[in-house]
Amino acid sequence: MTSSRTARPFSGALVGVQLAVVAITVALVAGVGVMRAVGEAESAAEQRIQDVADTIRRLPVVISAMQGEDPSGEIQPIVDAALTASGFQYITVADLNGIRVAHVDPERVGEPVSSDHGPIRDGAEFRGVETGPQGVTYRVKLPITAENGEVVGTISVGELVSEIRHQALAQSLPIALASLGSILLGALLAWLIARWLRRELYGVEPEQLVSLLQAHQAVMASGHEGVVTVDTAGRIQLVNAEAARLLGLDPEAAEALIGEEARVLPASIRDILADGAESHHAHLRRLGDFNVYAQAAEVRHCDRPVGRMVSLRDRTELDRAAARLQAERAEAELLRIEAHEFENRMHLVAGLIELGEYDEARSYLESAQDLRPVPSIEVPVLAAFISARIGVAAREHVTLELEGSSSVASDWPVFDEDLLVVANLVNNAVEATGFGGTVRLLLSGDEEAGVLQIRVDDDGPGFGDNPGGLLRRGVTTKEDGARHGIGLDSVNRAVSGRGGRLEFGASDLGGGSVIAALPLPGSSSGSDSPVSLAGTDARERNGTTEDHRGETA
Image (cartoon, rainbow, N blue to C red):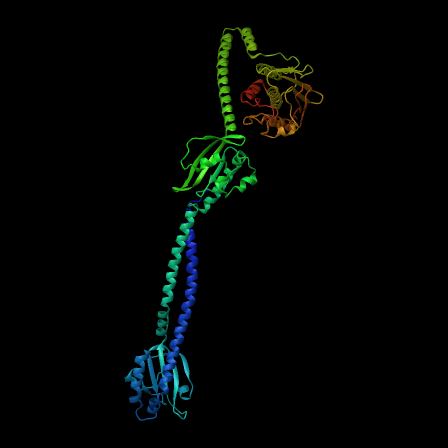
């Protein structure tokens, strides 16, 4: 089932991944930088509060005023100036009774402080966060001591925590802006890289690489057309197996050509590749022992030239194909003529039967089909079958003889497999021996053993050194194997299915000899019923019995 989801373009995915990496990296770095900046800003603010408090408490005028009659009148102006200079939220100075003598709000002078200054009056110091009338503040509380070390008052300086953090974040704003700029720059660079990579890959997406690899392997393994490609720089990029054969190179040498300059190719091929024009016609070229048709073409993708290719076709193969086509046309024409003659004969036979001239009709059929009597074969189906084959062989100018020792009783059951084996073995022998040849057939029904013995001898070329190899489907001794390589495989299957045996050897006629032993099928096999004459005719009509020697897989 095909997914309906549209594949994400490779360039978009690459930009997304790169942008994510950049954003995460920048975010982590920026986060650490902001945290450090905020921490440093808070520490700096706390130190300033500490410094202001410590500076005010050490002023002689403040120490003297705290020991005088009107400390507020002398200290309040100092506090106001310090508040203006520092910008802190508040500065409070209190006496030993905890009464404010100076405050950010002068109207609250004379009131008790809002927090505990008891430990401070005892000489302790405080630095930390407390909640006061103005909110949560970071404050520093210090004692004011006279020259003799006596505590004469306390001072408290504070700033809102929120204000400190706001100032710290404001100081980290450049880091945030720089981080945002880095992300945008990273996105731009990622887009440029993805665009460059897509251009270099000619827009090929990852999911298309499998198809390209399959196409590349198919071209490399092609045995019908040689292909040589070069890139725009004139370097060889591909030489498939057929091209290597036509160039007279072994696979290792062809592989070594990849990446080499095109000048290492033969001049006839190099000239075609160098021609920038599109070639619509094949050029006949001589490559070593081969005459080949070469045709060049420009390879383009998205209107961009990516190189050139030249296809090479062996003229010998093309001539063979043309000859086979001509032979097929001639055979088709012959079959058309024979069909026309057969139709005329059938009209004549029908007329004779209509007139009641049965003897004339039979005599005409016997003369037309060149039927030969086979008295030693008493089974009508098998006798008619062999008689017809003798006539067919005679039209091929081949003598098909039924050996005198042949004998099949009239009650011998004949099955489909019997006719298939006889027909294929006889046809193979007739084609193998050719014009003027001789084929000898022996049929013997051994009633005691329940085995039909079939032997076919001919004076043809024989089977060679490995006759057993002809039993594989597609293997044939014919030059044109496209229509052959089936018959002996069918014979082997039929004989094996009946538990028989098939033997190959040399004939005393000088050619090959095939012996097939077909035991009678068991009575329990319902599918193995004897054939009728009509069944035999049908098998002959659909071409089952028209295979040739070596027509095995």
